[in-house]
Amino acid sequence: MGQTFSEKLLGSKAGQKVKAGDIVIVSPDRILSHDNTAAIIKSFRELGLKHLPHPERLVVILDHVVPASSEKYALNHKIIREFVKEQRINNFFDVNYGICHQVLTEQGLAAPGKLIIGADSHTTTYGALGALAVGVGRSEVASVWATGEIWLRVPETIQIQLEGSLPPGVAAKDIILSLIGEHGADKANYQAVEFAGEGATCLSIASRMVLCNMAAEMGAKNGYFLPDQQTLDYLHQRGVEDYEVINSDPDADYRERIILHLEQLEPQVACPHSVDNVRPVSEVEGIKIHQALIGTCTNGRVEDLEIAARILKGRQVHPEVRVLVIPASHQELIKALKKDLIDIFVEAGCLVLNPGCGPCLGAHQGVLAPGEVALSTANRNFRGRMGSRDSFIYLASPATVAASALEGKITDPRKYWS
Amino acid sequence: MKGKVWKYGDNINTDVIFPGKYTYSPQTPEEMAQHALEDLDPNFASKVRQGDIIVGGKNFGCGSSREQAAICLKAAGVQAVIAKSFARIFFRNAINQGLLVFVDEDLVDHLSQGEEVELDFEKGVLESRGARFRLPALPEMVVEIIRAGGLIPYTKKKLSRQKK
Ligand code: SF4
Image (cartoon, rainbow over all chains, first blue to last red; front, side, top):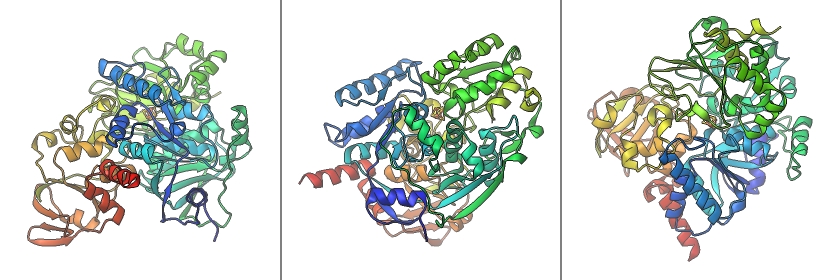
């Protein structure tokens, strides 16, 4: 019996042959933390160490509340900056870079064969480049900073075969929403999800990041695509040469295989208050919205902004909708500027905000009042996530959000897709 | 230790356990406890007592990796969470905070809102309405972390042993 990607990668890190269910002790190549770094520093200090044994493994990115919106947040950032200096952490990205998952990727810090752990549940995103990337909590990160090691259970794997290609107006977000809706928010709990098939090969790296990002919403430990030419090109452009391509064996032991035919997909919407409460757009059309968000680590890349701009170009957003556009990173913002997308957004009446998480976690920049409805390209719609516990969050693709921003209600984007 | 049961449904996520808007400003565990389950059950934080037990359905703790979700429950006095299944990051976070977590479908179905139970971790038993239930055994490493009072004290011990 062959081995899966996760079995091979964790086995090679552990220096022994392993199978799903085994527990291994491994040393991660990269350890990500963001605004929560201050809390991790506190735990690290409790461990009694003066210096980090491996500062080169850390990646610290300020993105959750940037720039600081209150004195408390400002203090939080200050503590982190001082620690970064003191410990000589080179991979530090201050408030002007963007969302951690986008920044880590575009800086060439994620690559095939790497083991990455992060103090953020959407760490799974780096699977798009063939890394094994797992989210953990803060104490765990403090402990890995100090010891260099973590214990992990080798996950079983669900393979999702994407067949065919996407119809016009339908995107990566619709693929993953449809999968979560069909199979539930705990389908892949403790397991790995491998996205495969010809439909997977056709997806851009940005689209692959959408799927891996939201694999976390299926409960997955890690989601990944096996590296192909596109992956290698992406790395080459960033000057990344140190990596090892790991593939699943053809006769690997998958727990389950799921097939999804992409031609049959229509735009999807996740309804309040859970990510697996998914309906085709046709069933929720007409619901009035107060705020639209195009951005986040799920859908804030230039590929997403281009789709939204295509719909908004030469039009005006609905007067009763606040439309927020937040590029995922400074680099993506520059790309959008060069493609004249930002002009389109501003002229259409959108608010273009600085790269960062923005209102995704309800801390600042567009918090919802009781009774308000938001349509967002983010990955989570839990009660109270974007503000009031009595507000409502719907999730959809950038195309659906842009079309709905024009009409002031949830709208099928395909009517703007000429 | 004796405690009261607080029973909830499936997919209790970390945003309703500990809202995101409080996550990136320094807070003590006691402050965090005041927001425990704020968006799910506004009565919980003021009524919960030392030793109480939360009973959940499937996928308890899904969502964000925020460790405050475990810290706030522990600081509020919760001694254990018993659920049909847990989201993996919450499960690890709970253990790392020394909060007991057990997966037991039958026990979840048996326990009812508001009832008084007694949990004995060392013996691995839970008593409810005169009946005794054996709690599922936890892996050795997990028991060691819980006995140490969480991952940070556990790692501290390990590091000091390495030095010697
Ligand atoms: S954009 Fe939202 S989901 Fe992504 S890292 Fe930021 S807060 Fe988390």
